[in-house]
Amino acid sequence: MSKLKELLKDTLVEWKTVGEYIDYIQPTKYLVKTKNYHKSYKTPVLTAGKTFILGYTNESDCIYKASMSPVIIFDDFTTANKWVDFDFKAKSSAMKILISKNESNISLKYFYYWLNSLPDELVGDHKRNWISKFAIKTFPIPFPDDPQKSLEIQEDIVRILDDLNEQNKALTTGLEQEINARKQQYDYYREALFKFKGKDVAHFPLGDENVGKFMRGSGLQKKDFTDSGVGCIHYGQVYTHYDTFAVQTKSFVSLEFAKNARKAKKGDLVIATTSENDEDVCKAVAWLGKDDIAVSSDACFYSHNLNPKYVSFYFQTEQFQKQKRKYITGTKVRRVNVNDLQKILIPVPIIEEQNRVVELLDEYEVTSKCIKKELNHEIDLRNTQFKYYRNLLLTFQKEN
Image (tube, rainbow, N blue to C red; front, side, top):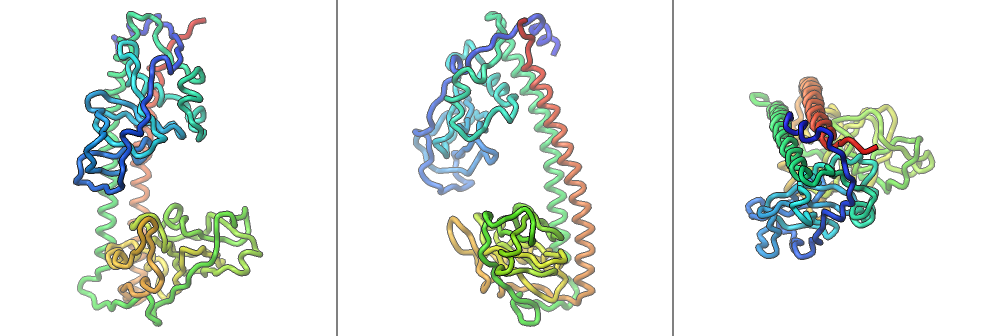
């Protein structure tokens, strides 16, 4: 950074209106027409949000050629943004395509790094942000005020941050691969335990009268939640909040509401029977709290005579998932009905063997979570380090 330090020495900042330097293109012309995405298709469909690449399309007309001139895609409501240097189609008309008005005055990549250095609380209030904030004087952008050195300094800052970003990506990619490897190892171990190789273990339908029975949940919406009262589980919480088991609920309903609600008891499995994707359908959590809890519609609970964690772990296996998939119905909303759930087979060993499986998976799950937590912490540290240097390089000496 010695050259940059020399360039920045005695350099004052001049604050300019973003709209003087950055223009935008409405994505209307480049919007994808269908949702017929497939990984074998060539052109990515982008959103400025976390997902970024929604899928790939075979549409060949009206593709934005960012490979020739990179751009920033900007969500006008949330201010989420991405740097794009490859050809793409756009998903939403709320997304703006940001370009430089004059590349001899401003590096668009410099603007991108500056945009992402803004504090989160200053942006993203779910209004049309570009015109109301950025294009006017609400968020002025700092420039070195010497016109002879301004673009040179911007480009040097970009080069340094690009190098740091590449180093950060390499490190975090390695850590993410380690997390995925641990997950695959855990999945393999769990699958092996439920195959019971060399053991004579009978398989029964989940709805067998000697195994268990399902009960649908009752009408429970988020508007029915209260600050305290009787515990409840809403179907959407099963795959967004809970893991294999739970001893306390995230939400509650009033005592009056609970009187008429269908409730799961200790040991029951609470199962989400509806989701927007196949993976989350039939996600289950074993309820191990001492009190009965209300369960929403679009969910059911399963009363049985097995080890509750054993059943919950089984719902995570490929053995269960493979059977589940043939019963999924719906298009936008995916669901499995209770009558079909009853047909899915489960291996039923003696209770001592169930307990052994649970003990082993409990131990392995705790170890895996600890390792994942440590690796995610390291990733957070790397990202924090990058943000520190980015903000340091984008902070200039101000005129008195």
